[in-house]
Length: 200
Length: 200
Image (cartoon, rainbow over all chains, first blue to last red):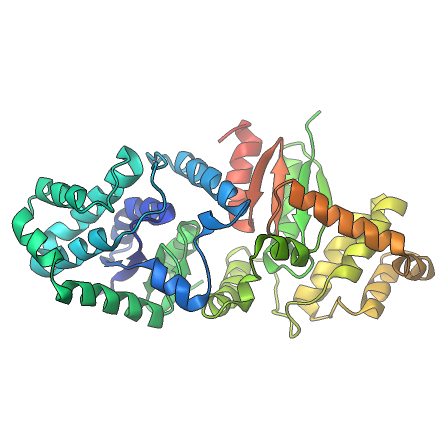
């Protein structure tokens, strides 16, 4: 039995979105499943003294162009959101809660949230939008709303982000399979070679 | 007549080295030539408030691993240098001078310098090593040594780096073709699509 691919992502990451669109197909091709890990890049960037790409002069402009171009190159539907980047605590916490309470619905919720933000310009930093999308995905809205207000869920996301940092995660998307780390959607070709051959 | 590919690189950049190994073949395949632009990333990073990847905790370790893996993946001979990163002023100035005085020898000199550093662990921040490699490539050692001591050549590299920054270059390798910018060896697939189709 092959081990799963650990897939770390922040909901505000366009390259994380592209990878989220493609990872299930890639995993299935090589008999793997996907462990989805929503994390917050903010605390990780802070700990390392790094910054979001898009906040850096020149590099930020290039990156916005590269995101659009990369989407076209891979035939992935993408529309740059008007609010970007955004806080993704609510979306990440909602995902964690669904993973714990209704795991079968979690991957679809992740993809719907990503797609809402990166193709429909729905601001998923707004709790009401996350709740509506969750409800549309068959999740009990009231129960989720209650869970989002608890300190336990906040602590779980904090701990999950800390654990990711300890595992060497410093960006999104970040994939770890059989101990081998891959950072970025542009490492999917190497990830695929590794899945195929067991080494690079 | 197709316009050339502007290829910007720093001699201390492993991904710049990988790209330097591959760019001529890619350019020739689509009827393009290559304009080689040696630059110094130091002043560019300073202006943007960014840093060399390898100096960042965690990310640096990953990057070193990724460089080895990327070399294997592309079947490029690579041996991580014991001194890294290094100052590349002398190598870049020597290249500029050869481009001006004996342009036919410049591309070979660039590739030999890169290969010396990234496959033979020869520290090309040491002027003596650059002079010896240049002489091995049929370049007049004494004339080059004299040129390296002139303020004019230093100013030319400073101006070339500044011009690159103004053209939007913020990393190595950086390719610009028909106004379209590509950052990183991992954008060669998109660069190739652009060369092939004239757009992405």
